[in-house]
Image (cartoon, rainbow, N blue to C red; front, side, top):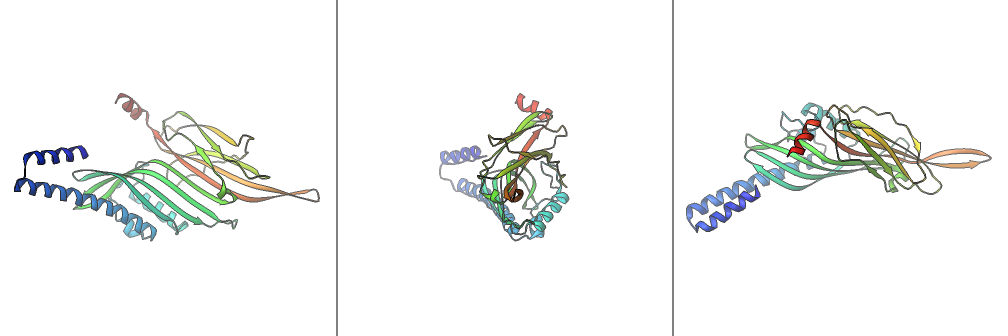
Length: 286
């Protein structure tokens, strides 16, 4: 789209200063920029509605036939939003628009979205939620107004850390994209504080709603502070989450008795987009 606009501008310059051409140029230019401004306004309003947890206004920015790349329609997505806001009503959202491409009544927008919140815990430890995702929004102009018709998350990382775990530099590594029914390795690495026993687990599950809780098997963190696990991506053409859970405990020895106390815990989540086998072949062909 940018190349086409540049070509049109060059043609208008070569043709010379004609009233009819200038009028056409201004009309085209204003039309394009009005759509760009409208799209930016739409995404900024989503952030504003989300920060105010204004559910009705937020959902009104979506097309009634909305369906995202994870297979969630507007009804399921609406329920998901309500559940998140009922659990965490103090999340601060932000969006950075990277690129906008417009073609008639359709548009694609690449964005980086972040969210942050201080979260409560039953263990009365202070917790922090951080999330960053790189996404593509697909927009459609309906009755003169832009609506979100779909979206696709390219990369996504989320952490929820409590107590001493907030100070850890945690690295959870997994492929951003993998072919269906294919082996891949996920690794977790962090250095626990001194005199602390660290345990951890790594699980994998499909991106779906409601989300099923995967079975966790905790292990003591190895001496090299790296825990690895091998997975096989699902054959249902559904994207996956790799979830790492960690726990920090300290031992207090008194009168030959050992008492373990929890000093921190948390979760690190990263997305693995599963590429269907048919789509993988098409990509290689292209």
